[in-house]
Image 1: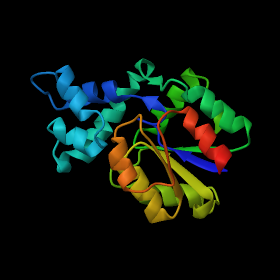
Image 2: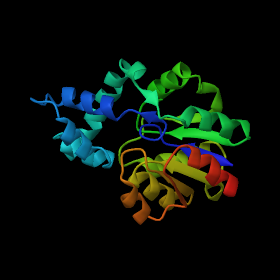
Image 3: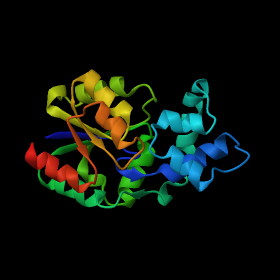
Length: 206
């Protein structure tokens, strides 16, 4: 099967670093309290940025700066527990794996190499705009001569599921990332995974 994965919030547990980076960029006078951070966690990325005081018009510029700042902190980011083994198994079973993300391709490749995951992926599409996932998904599919109905897009945000529907791919929502499970389920993805090991089960059942 052809499996396209989001990166932040799906493979990489980068929430804390993302919040720190945007607090620095926006020169927030006080850091978020633990309660404030927990309230943001579970929200889509756009709402997280708004919660940090980022206006919509600032998003493209700040995302570009954020990617550069994350490059120096990529070694602080770890894969979600269980995710490396899941990726290894999916690859070993012959599935074609891709990544599409708002994070930079350089950051993603460095992360994958650090965690010995770099040999599992056919292609990586990075630097996707916050509103540009449908277009980027189409480009990845066309660029690799794939067919949208044959693809599964795995992501942790509502915009990931929405992008999959617009492009015509199947979707798997993961509940350990940015968006809350109930928000994801409302969009009726093809399947919902509450733990990385669920991905193995879902593809075995399919």
